[in-house]
Image 1 (tube, helix red, strand yellow):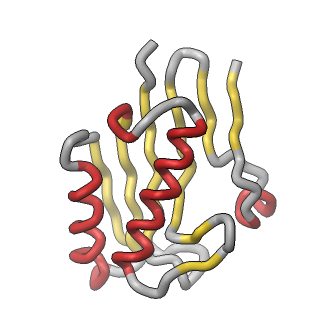
Image 2 (cartoon, rainbow, N blue to C red):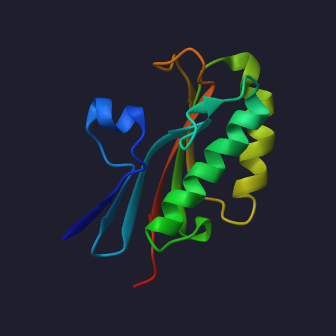
Image 3 (cartoon, rainbow, N blue to C red):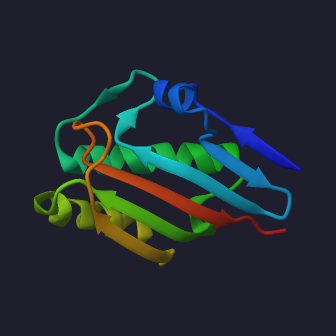
Length: 127
């Protein structure tokens, strides 16, 4: 059985997806999170603030799933501009320092020009 968790964001409604999917065997799949504050749908215009908000969004998702960031085994990161990559690395490195998950990072356009970073994670809860 799978549990599906949403925040009710405009993106989730438009694309009909779950923010988090929790599998019975302990796997937690967090959809790509951006720097939007999903409660207010506001977004900062600098990479550092967006990246920090992205991690706050991820922490919320993991908490709703009964997991924490220490359970993360993989992180996938999309940065919209190579010039923002150095600022993103500082924030990502800080949050991943103790966990050291498998990581794939790439530079690519994102669907909303305000979004500078999007991150998805996969976690495995202790069973």
